[in-house]
Image (cartoon, rainbow, N blue to C red):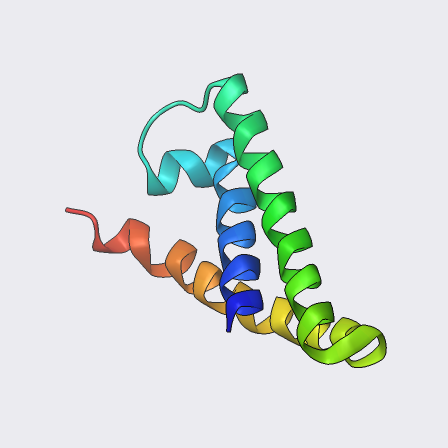
Length: 89
């Protein structure tokens, strides 16, 4: 579960590091310093997700499980990008 949360947080940070997605979800310009921080947080989240998967399942199954978690963790982020801008008044 921890690996899933790390991966989902990483994907959310990486998506918010894109100016278009940041403007749609947050509503404002994206400063270059914030963009760099979000990218760093996103990649760190994905790496921590890999580390948690490896700790839980070992090397072979950990990598396979992490790839599955990446796919599963991307779904809520995708849904947020699909419906969040429409739900704003």
